[in-house]
Each structure stands twice: as C-alpha cells, then as structure tokens.
Length: 394
Image (cartoon, rainbow, N blue to C red):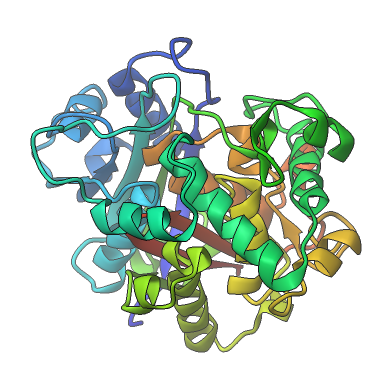
C-alpha cells in the first residue's frame, strides 16, 4: 500500500425496525452530514463519494447526497449484498491510497422490509442458484427460509465436526445483548441469558432459535477518508488510520468442499484475514477489538475460527473462557453486533467502521475497550464478497 488513509470522520444514525425509520435518502443524508461534521469539513471538500445500498433503484446514492450538496463530484453506487458498506469503504480507501483523491466519502444506507430476505427480480436467474443447489443437497429443510438454511447449515456443520453444543450459539447471542445494552444506537438493548435464547421460538429444531438470527433493520452510516497531506493541511484528526485491507470473493472450494461452512464464506473470510495479517505484519493475537459479521450466532462462531481468533474446533472453549468479551482475549462486537444492533445491509460495514473508529479514539463511552490500539473489521456478503479491514490508533 502506498499512502495511508486516515479515518477523519464517522457518522451513524440509530438503527430502527422496518417501518419506524426515515426514508433511505433522509437517513443517508443525515449519516453523511454527521461524518462530515465529525471530520470538521464541508461536503464541498469531498472529491469522490461511494454510496452503498442493496434494496433500491439505481442512483439512490445521488438521491441521498444531493440533499447534502450538488457539487458535481463522482458518486459511485455500490451493491455487494451484505458486504456493500465495507465495499464502499474499500473503494474509498483505494482512491485515497492511490493518490487519486485526497478526501473521499463512503456512505451506506438501507430501507428494509419486515421478514426474511428475498429476491426482487423474479424474471431472471437468481444469483444464488449455485448456493441454493448446494444448500438443498447438503441440508435440505425446504420449509425453512434460505438465509436461515445457509447459516444454520453452517452451524450444523460445525456441530457435526466438533461436537459444538447449541448452547454455544446461545451464549454468543446472550453476549451480544450484554454489549448492546450499553449501546444507545442498538435496536435491541434488552439483556437476555443463554437460557432465554434456548427457550425462544424454535426455527430449526436442534439448530436455531429465533433470537440467534439478526433482525431486518433500517439505518445509515458514513466515513470520511483523507490522505496524510490533506489531514495535515487542514489540521484534521489523524488518530485512526487503515493499516491494511483485503477483499476476497469465492473460490472453487465454496462448492467443491461440500461443506456449508464453506458455502457461507468461511474460506473467503480466512483468505481476507490472512492477507490483512500478512500486509500489516501482525497476527490475530495482536488484536484488541473485532467487529465481525454476526448475521446469525452461527456465523459469529465459525468466524472466530476463520479469522484465527481461536483454533479450528476451538470456538466452544473460546466462548466458555470469555475470550470473546471484556476481560478476555479479543472483545468481539462491543456494539452488540448485527444480532442486537441490527443489520441494515448497505449500512452495516460502515457502522462497523464507526464503532471501531470510536473504539480507537477512546470515545466509545460505555462500550469502550480499554487501551484498544488495533481493531479488525469483518463484513461478509453471500454471492459473494468478504472485506476485512485493520484499523490502528496512531
């Protein structure tokens, strides 16, 4: 990587349940304004913008940002499933590090409907056809919505390989609730116990209860990335920068391994994390805090191992030792994660950026991880793409 990209400003609005939020363009504009204000600059200072969303027509990014300003800059609309927000961040970071732009805005927003995710265009081949075929062959259960079958199937694979009990997933959800109780921007702030999670509505007997799945959510978040020279010239905050970043997509192993963990991106996550560790010259043992993609408790568990936070098959011990929370080895999802904070698809990656930037600034208030210096972000989208970003306090 050539030049360093500093995270000069971040902004996030509180997430909300579908039907309880402002329209997407209002949410996006507000998040952008918050990030600009946090950076201490005007929209006129921004040279490029990348706007991410999944459910919306073309040029929704312009619709949101024109409320902030109409300056004629390039606005690129990004759609990469659940990794959309971090893909916008990836592109913004590339623009700054390459020297193409000194000040870039990454924005993510989503206005979602209640219920399970579904395809919008029914008159053409589904992009998930290969994933659906693999899931049908490996887990069956046609009566269960596909997203639940994908990630529940991955959790079931881990259970069968390593003897992981259902209670491990329940403990992850309970941990998420404890963290979210201290986060005023989380949608679900009620604390639940592992016993509460296990006693909740059964979605897949022996595999998943309702509380183990994240809710559909509306929201927006944004980040302003700047070059070193721009930050110095304008006297901007340079306390947090992106030390390394990687984006991966699927390889033949996704389907050839005949393993649901691989189908939902385990290998993408492992490859992206390894690339970041190598580029930064650090290891997972050096991380202080992680925001990872816990769309289901099952995905958080397998991601511990994909990111090498623990050994393969070691997730149950990692959880039981409290190594995934305050006082343990690596605090994961201090925000409450997608499980409690919510998962507005296009905004999620930038909401993770918001949380980790505040952690490294020492400004995370009740969720603060004391002394945090290195933070890892993991954002996954099926179809597929995975982005990992390593932030450092300078």
